[in-house]
Length: 124
Image 1 (tube, rainbow, N blue to C red):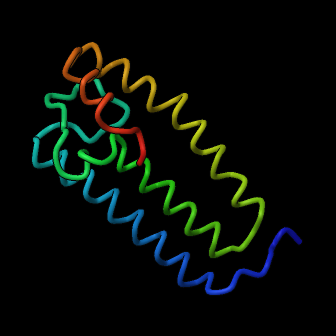
Image 2 (cartoon, rainbow, N blue to C red):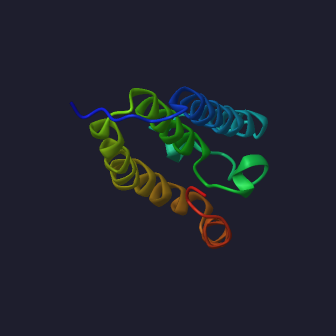
């Protein structure tokens, strides 16, 4: 009963999912090219601060990709409850994943990270 009509929802959902997949893959590729860890549970293992490629536009392309994939799925479902979960995902990821990662990276990269954070937004 929380579903709603959404014209062209399949096309919009596909576009969001594709954009999310591309953002995530580009993030992983940039990390692999820099030969640094992709593991989000071990930010302290980072050997390089990646600021090239997609990281020139967003500091978190993999998380942005996940959000776009979730948004695509929510649009596909055309369900209000699924759409409401998107901001919950953003808040959770910021609080429990991104902020701890940034603290760990700050200990490794210091001023270089600060300058990068001032230049590039977290998402877009």
